[in-house]
Image 1 (cartoon, protein in one colour):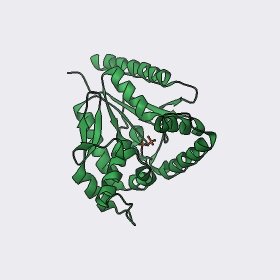
Image 2 (cartoon, rainbow, N blue to C red):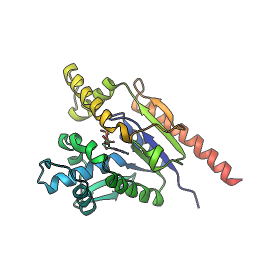
Image 3 (cartoon, rainbow, N blue to C red):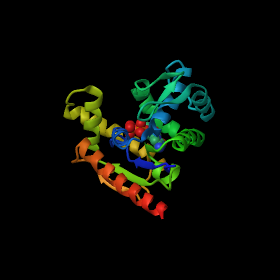
Image 4 (cartoon, helix red, strand yellow):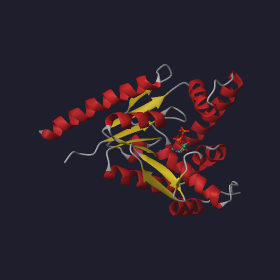
Amino acid sequence: MKRRVVIAIDGPAASGKSSTAHWVAERLGLRHVDSGALYRAATAARLRVAKGKAPAKWVEKDVLDAARKHVGLAPTTHGFVPEIGGAPADEEIRGPLVTQHVSAVARMQKVRDWVNEQVRDAARAYSVVVDGRDIGTVVFPKADLKVFLVADPWERARRRLVQQLQRSPTDKEIAEETDRLVQRDAKDAQQSGQAADAVLLDTTYLTQEEQVDRIVALAKAVTARADDTSAG
Ligand code: CDP
């Protein structure tokens, strides 16, 4: 039986982890698991219970109840999509209200345990590419390959806006988005980290294709080495 592979991709907000992880998984025939999408889905599920309004106080037990009751991870050809109430929730979880509150939710330890359980379940069943903030440090400290993606904040903001607006953003829009990203990085700092054995990849001057190519090459090298070692 072929052994399961885990590739961990971590990095700050909007560093391109999810899209990169998606394409790496597709190229290597692995499954992509987006841990951030689960934190977002837990946040969105709690907002739904509150009829779309942010609760006055975010209580760990309420978020956990909403996540357990309403959020699931549904398999697709190349990965998983988070579902809320049995329906795909990809658009809902990317909305501004979720983005505003997700960092507070992600600081709740029981929510972190719940997300990590979903991610580890997926990795028991499939070879996976998992992206997040603490995948190489906490969730899979023995991952076959760990990559830490960074990019200049202005460039991260520009890319995120192009994706959201489907047009070239103005400098003012990029400056405002840069502020939001830097603030979110600060809120997430406690639960984010680069593993000592992670490969640091600065994507500021790389195209999406180039960064995917680099990670695919690294993944092929480490998995070939691991297969050699296990063979004897
Ligand atoms: O794609 P983006 O950088 O906007 O963020 P994301 O990956 O969708 O993650 C959303 C939020 O979830 C982050 O801002 C963190 O607060 C939290 N998160 C986390 O704490 N640990 C992870 N492994 C992944 C995400």
